[in-house]
Length: 249
Image 1 (tube, helix red, strand yellow):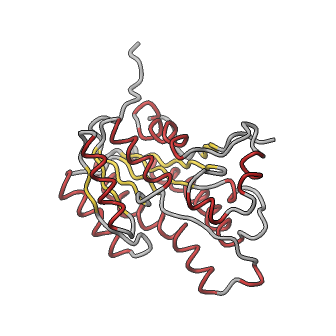
Image 2 (cartoon, rainbow, N blue to C red; image 1 turned 135 degrees about the vertical axis):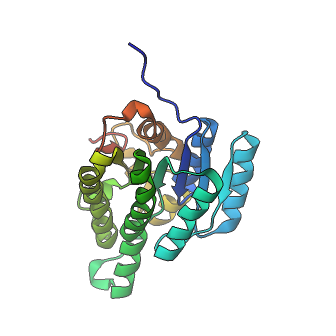
Image 3 (cartoon, rainbow, N blue to C red; image 1 turned 45 degrees about the vertical axis):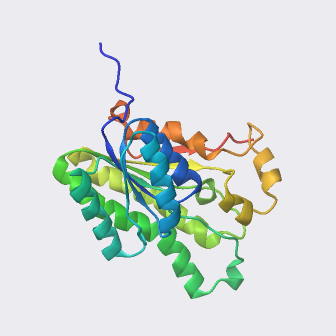
C-alpha cells in the first residue's frame, strides 16, 4: 500500500484575507510547501510585501487586490487566477473578522457589514471558484469559522451569526458538491495571537489562558490543518468542522 500524499506541491491556491494574521501565515506556509498562490485582500501594499517573501522562497504569487464582498471583484479575481495559472485547486476563505458590539447598539448597517464580510464573502468566493472546480472535477475549499460561531459569546451577535452561517454553509455545500469531487471543509480557531485579536478581544490574556493548552494559537498553528485539508491525503473528507482551538476546559 502506498502512503497518502500529504503534499500540496504544484497546487494553485487562492487565499483571501492574505494581508495579515492567519491569512499571511497560511500563504507563506503553502508557498514553503511548493504551492503557487493568488493573494487577495483589500489592501495592496501588504500583499506586495508578502509576494516578495513568497518569491524569496522560490514560489509564485499573484497579487490581486479584491473586496470579497463584491461579486464583480471576486469574479475578476478568479479570472486572474485562471489567466495566470490555468486552474484553481484550493480556495482558502480566510477573509473576515469581528468587533464587539452590544446587540442593542447595533445598527442595520453594522449588522449588514459584518455579515457581508464574514458570510457573503464566503458564498461569493466559493460559488465563483467552485464553478471552476466543478468543471475540473476536483477541488478543495477551506472555510474559516470560529468558536464564537459555536458558543454564545455576548457582544458578538452579528459576528457569531455570520460565522455560524459559514459552518452550516460548509456542510450544505459539501453535500451539494461531493458528486463533483469538490470537497468543502471548515477550520474553526479559538483565540489567535494576532493584531486583530489583540484589538478586538476583551481581556485577551485571560481568554488565551482559558484554553486547555493555556495559550492562544499562533497564526502558524492553523497551517498544518489547512495543508492536510488541501492535500490529497484528505480526499475522503468533506463537510468537516475542525476545531483548532487549544482544547476546551
